[in-house]
Image 1 (cartoon, rainbow, N blue to C red):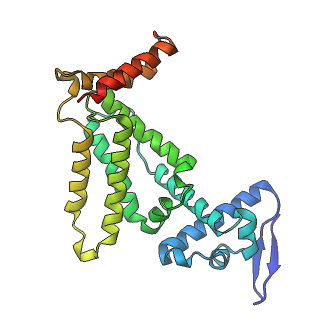
Image 2 (image 1 turned 120 degrees about the horizontal axis):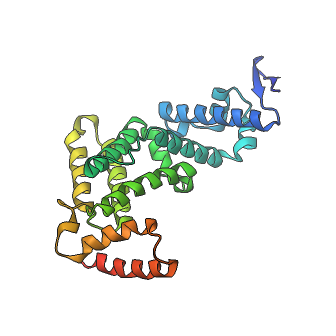
Length: 248
């Protein structure tokens, strides 16, 4: 059970009890209150006292739940990644792989532009990229890249492609937010997105080309589904394909 606690100004606030469910409810309430303060008033407004007041708790509750303000901000960053992940649409078999890549990039950029303070926090906290939600989102991106590779569309190594896609989306958001509103031209976002597409994909499936690099990438992308080869054989084949794919 939760219990009301008198405060100096005569009002009462709700202090969490020790049950796991109540603790989680209060934790979520504090995170949402902090995220709301962050978006409305900026990072400097997210003080332990302000968050406690917004959540209807005593300030010491913040320390019990998160350890310190840094722990709270890390939890808010995780909340941001979870919010972004919840808005992702995953098509396991898109009709157009290039358009699917564009759509995923657009979604990431739109989230950043709609949640500027939260987005900035998400990518400034050291523990952000270790969060479960971030890793789940990264798995979705890798799935997109793997489909491109399997179809012979991928121009570069899969890991490099992921880095380019992340860097261009993040750069697009932060550049846009740094500009005066009068200078924010949507053509900038389109140009950055198309530069990303050009950097990571071929105009035509490379598997149709005479060179071995595209075919090597396509074959390498299908290796996880291969059951005929032993683990050692797959490892050796992957090593050869890596060398072939790098020769472009």
